[in-house]
Image (cartoon, rainbow, N blue to C red; front, top):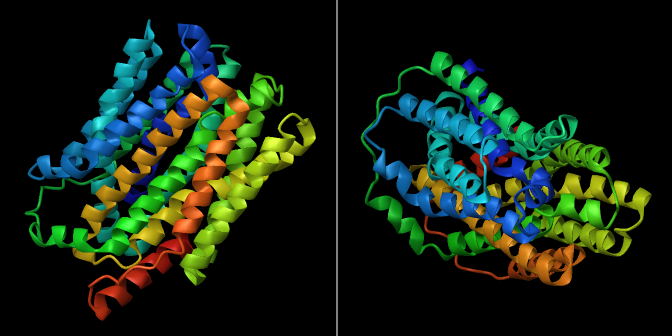
Length: 396
């Protein structure tokens, strides 16, 4: 596979680590700047909201600009924003530093997925998505450990900046010049919005991600307050969560390639079950080690389930547009989950964020039984997209 695909995967690792890396240091930031834990949670929520709003529009606004230039621009902004975050002297400055790269965040995905698919088809796309998966399972433990190792929350942002800078150098040297091409199907792509199957999947995606991040955003605080773990133990738990997530992502890909609907329902039921166990056994150290391991293995598959479920029957010519809607849905869900979890944590205690997640997962599970008319793509396009979704699953 071309080096450029791996560089794009590294870039994906960098930007997702920047987005989610703050999760592991929310309690520290809360104490550092004298804000509540739910207010600190807005560092993730605001980032996600910004991405959700900008995603459907940012690619169209930059359609005439060289794609390599845009990729390098996005990555350089991420380097700069992490440095500004590290040197922030107040919470407002830190919040602004987080918003700046979020505007361009979806632009990286739209371009990189398009390049990967053009170069290596589904295998290329799966490789770029692997960068996302690894960031969610390894990026947070790495940045959390850096903050704990140097006893300074700034180390987390410095590490994210270094990762983004390495990706920037890779993009600069290994991505060829990519002049903008004239957009095709500009008018036809909006017809997909008439498809009710697409909308139910986007709503389900929002529900799934909101459930996942209403609890995951406050996992560090949960382990600190309820399980009484120290910083080093929490770092190990997050690493364990991530390591098991890598295994879970692989197993989820295999399961999705066989039966998407059944796998989706089993995923929701398993995540509900593990969080019920965490709710009742959260104060017991050894059981929580086992529970967090299982939680991590299940949690990471949420992105893959939502992606494959939504794009499985989407025609190629509207795939980029649907991906922008999916990116928005991901981040609406993340921001909604972080917001709801923060409210519940502030008023009822961090243990009860699991209740929010369980309720949202239950609602999403019930939604999976609703039936809607099939989409209007041709049999040929449908078969092509099913093959695309299956191939992606097999490679992740």
